[in-house]
Structure formats: C-alpha cells, structure tokens
Image 1 (cartoon, rainbow, N blue to C red):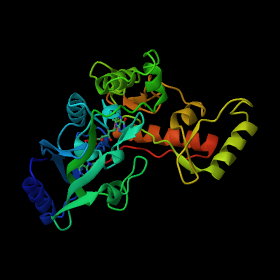
Image 2 (cartoon, rainbow, N blue to C red):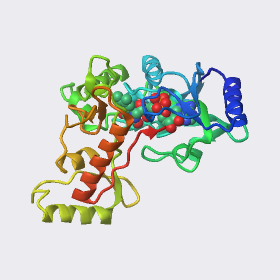
Image 3 (cartoon, protein in one colour):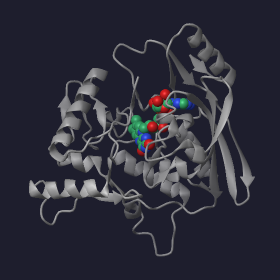
Image 4 (spheres, rainbow, N blue to C red):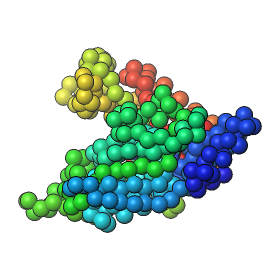
Length: 329
Ligand SMILES: Cc1cc2nc3c(=O)[nH]c(=O)nc-3n(C[C@H](O)[C@H](O)[C@H](O)COP(=O)(O)OP(=O)(O)OC[C@H]3O[C@@H](n4cnc5c(N)ncnc54)[C@H](O)[C@@H]3O)c2cc1C
C-alpha cells in the first residue's frame, strides 16, 4: 500500500501488527532486491510529498517529505542556487531513503547537510526527530541501517544548504571535467549538476530505459574500510604474489581514525573479474564493474549467486570481504 500521510503510515503499521505480518518500507525501490518468491508481508510505499524552505542566517533550511523523488529535490535546490547537494545529482530513489545509507557520491554525502530527520517509531507509533549527530552517520551507514534497522520510518528530512555557495569539486573526475575553465573561474551549481550527470551517464549510473547497463541497484559493493595495519599486510602480500607490480600503486584513501578505504572496483578488476561478465540472466555492467545488472529476466537468486562469486574471488585474492550495498527483502 502507499502511505501518503503519517496517518496512512500508522494505519498500515497497525494493520500489519494486528495480523503479525512483517512489513517492508519501500521508497523508490532502487536499492532493494526482492526475493523471487516476493515479500511475505506488507510492503508500505512512502508517498508523502511536499517541500518547504526558510532562511536560517546565511543558510537556508529546506525540508522535504520522504516520498519526494530525490533527483527532483536536487534539481529544485540547484535551480534555487542552494549549494550542498549538487554532486548528488542523478541518484534515483526518494528523499526518505537518503539518510538510511547516508547517500553519497562525487565528494558529497547527505550527512554533511542533514540537520534533522523526522521519523515515525514503528514500536510506539510516535513521531520522533533526530539531529544529524544522533543519526550515527558513517560511510554508506547510519543507525537506521544498523542497530535501529527497520525501527524508524523516515517521514521527512531537513537539509541546511548555502544560497550562492560554491560547488564542491573534490572529486578527480569532476575536477578533470572543468580543467579548461579559465583560472579563477568557478563553475555554477547547475554546471556541476550537468557534469555529474554526464559522468554518471558514461558509467550507466543514471537510470535510462535505453541503457541496459543501467538496470542495476547502482554500485553493488561498498568500498571496504580496513585498518592501516591490515592494509599494509594486504599490500605486502599483493606485491609478494605479483598481483601488484613493484612500481604499481595500491589505490587507497584515508578514512580517518587510522582506517583506510580501498577501491572495491580495483579489487574486483585485480581479482580477474571483468566488466560485462555474465551469470545467467544477470551480469557485471559493461560500463562499471561494481554494478550487477539484470541482463534478461535475471532472478534475485542469480544476483545472490553472482554476489557470492565476486565476494569469494576477491576474498581468495586479497583476503578482503566485499559488503553488498543493496537491501535484500
Ligand atoms: C543507477 C543507480 C545509481 C545509484 N547511485 C548511487 C550513488 O551514487 N550513491 C548512493 O549512495 N546510492 C546510489 N544508488 C543507490 C540508491 O539509489 C540510493 O541508496 C537511494 O537512496 C535509494 O532510495 P530508494 O528510495 O530507491 O530506496 P529503496 O530501495 O526503496 O530502500 C532502500 C532501503 O531504505 C529503506 N527505506 C526507504 N525509504 C525509507 C523511509 N522513508 N524510512 C525508512 N526506511 C526507508 C528501505 O526499507 C531499504 O532498507 C544508486 C542506485 C541506482 C539504481
């Protein structure tokens, strides 16, 4: 059923509770893989709509209801010249799902700009609010995906954006895109949005019915985060076994607190996996090795099999576990 209001949501949760049925909260479904047998319970699709904004000193506070399509929201904010989420252009799904895995791309993540998450507690059916600090955000993580998984239904999110703010150009691909701009010139937020969408299209990371490589959940595997000590062991062993040439760099990025983030795509490629590899009706995207795509009537079972295959290949080669990003329902 579709929940278009908090009242609808309470009714749906009560209905499921009275029948002792499990429930699944669905946004746009872009990060969900339903089992081939379907979901044996109540699927509640979030349909609350609406947006409002108010000045907050030099910033603007923008609240969007959970059922607003995320990319429409980004387009609206960019059109108003509000900086803070321009690099998150082209990501499918709804606003309400963005705090769940702390959606991020091209150098920005929602944790940087979220001020408040409004939710309904499925246990008490009371409305609750969380400050950003209370959300326990991390890399593709939050309390809503960890200890409190399934407990809170996000009903609205308030973001703090900067009117006329400069765009974020941290990411190498984006910097490359603007390399020919005259010195001292900064691209507009709209130009950055266009650039992000163009870069994403090259990787089939924008949903497009005409692009078979975009029939995915986005990047299927998260970039693994390991301690610096673990990284040194992995790197030494990769050099010793010839997986890495003497002058070749092992890509890694500082992840704070003595942790290091590895590139899941690089690990897959160096484990002998290739873009375009197929497994029954599913396969690895020809344009982005991290995406598992539905080639032709693929099944959820095949997605799981391919996931296991990739995980075991990378684990055998590097001793690193790749964690999936989508949710299996
Ligand atoms: C082509 C493509 C590109 C993508 N690129 C990126 C990217 O660059 N960065 C990134 O981070 N993600 C990316 N994704 C993944 C996905 O789009 C995001 O995670 C998005 O936020 C999921 O939104 P959704 O509404 O579709 O979530 P759904 O698939 O509907 O749900 C995902 C999870 O969130 C829960 N959930 C959804 N709504 C709510 C709610 N209101 N309250 C509580 N729980 C809720 C669900 O129960 C489920 O656990 C991509 C996906 C695709 C298909």
